[in-house]
Image 1 (cartoon, helix red, strand yellow):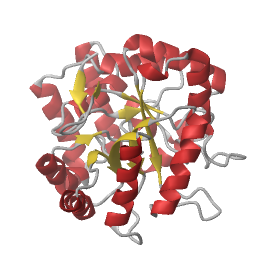
Image 2 (cartoon, rainbow, N blue to C red):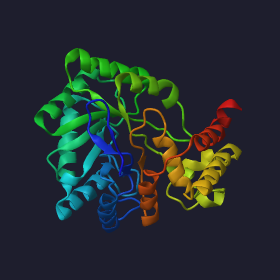
Image 3 (spheres, one colour):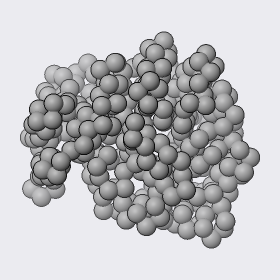
Length: 320
């Protein structure tokens, strides 16, 4: 599978990252284990999760996804074959949130225990913590890198200005620096990445691993009516796309998929891979067909006409 460098000086990773928010939520442990084995066979060895996954599910407290991944590492012995990313900072309850140094130190130890590993390849600030000075947060991350508990650090859900400030803070203080950004970006969510974040990404040569790459499944074409969303786990997330503009984007995906002998999901991911600055879109799979789509998307090269057609459908909302 094609690989790209994750930021200047960062590691090489596959051009698709496997999203870990489904493990223990919409994908049971045994099915997750089978998916990990199959994913590695495809060359999909980049797994992205977070300590908060899947706290939103009834009866969950967070850490469920990391725990399942850790159990699979213990059972399979394949930790060395995986580029593992997780995140810290979202609210886990009981005042466990944010990016203060003392909390980062506690959170990383909890993640390492759940993941049954002695290091995390990419440890990411899940969202900006404006109440904590950037130098303190980055100093804590720097300590983890020096201790060998973390190889690289990344940011998620930062504004362009704060991301640039964080990168300059690392440079001025000789601290470990973010090598990657994890933004919300896909064919129907193009702002603020393209206007606010991309210039920072390009200036500092960061890798970009967008989340919700398929817009919670909408870009796969599985939601074509209100009725399709009623019993779906992520149905509420796609309501805002159920309009003439959103369906126009799906129609454009259908057209390119038919022309390329592909699927809408593969086309949507291939479009992302082709965008400036993008390293590896993150997408989740809950069955074999979806996992196969992720692997095939990495091979799909869209021609200029297809990309322009998708852009035209996507940007109609902006220009209307």
